[in-house]
Amino acid sequence: MAESVPFYGYGLGLRPPYVDDILNGEHAIDWFEILTENYLVPGGKPLAVLSRIRQRYPVAMHGVSLSIGGSAPLNTDYLQKLKALADRIEPMWVSDHLCWTGHGGSNTHDLLPLPYTKAAAQHIAERIQHVQDVLGRRILIENVSSYAAFQQSEMTEWEFLSEVVTAADCWLLFDINNVYVSSVNHQFDPLDFIRGVPAARVKQFHLAGHSDYGDYLIDTHDHAICDPVWQLYREAWRTFGPVSTMIERDDEFPPFADLMAELQMARDIGESLRREAA
Image 1 (cartoon, rainbow, N blue to C red):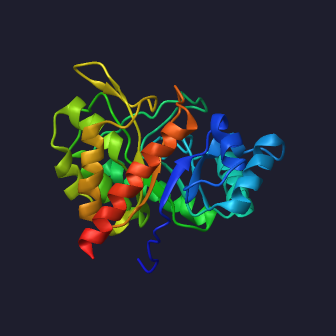
Image 2: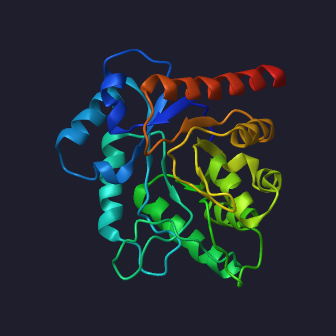
Image 3: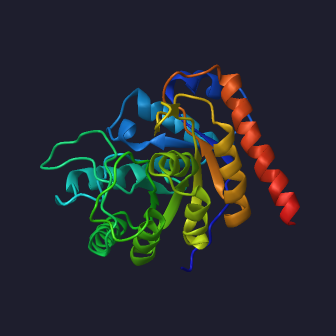
């Protein structure tokens, strides 16, 4: 891997309820992540707003429809629209999820789990390589939360993830909340996950909240970040070093000031650990 891994600081997911706050003030936000599918259009208000944001901030693209783990052929039309948007806004990077989202042309709008097998890892790595060839850039793949497991799995999730990103020569978007959610649902030690992936591949962190139903957790992005996830964030910093970090919030939107307070906490933790390591 000849490319370096830049540290862009601390960002937020760009969501409509906060656009006015963002555009009408100066805030301690270093960058934004957009939901790619909201902007795969030739024009209109979403792209106009994005253009204004992009003039002031770096932007990353984050998709939910690549279905990189699927068995159906990759959607050529979707890839061309993805490339057109990336060429237009020149993002920090483009990312999507290690999952499948549909079959036969349908999209379930869910991030569905995969069997952790060598055959699946090779299949996905080849598809990632194809996407990177089309886009002309290396992409990031994110670990998802899961609520069921395949009996056919031959390895742990972190071993599978490591095999995929290494074989595909892509980057890793490390979602810390997803690690915690899955660790509770599947009863593994989340520190094994953090220590089990190749640190040189980790280019971005996600932080988010989830819903707690007692026996299981659901990755809903509609709650504040909980203490165990903050603790895992600290461990991830100690393991991977400075990694660009952002907060996802997709429902039950709090006042903008509350979200900014969470972002400041992420910044305080990260900068404290940077000083500690110096």
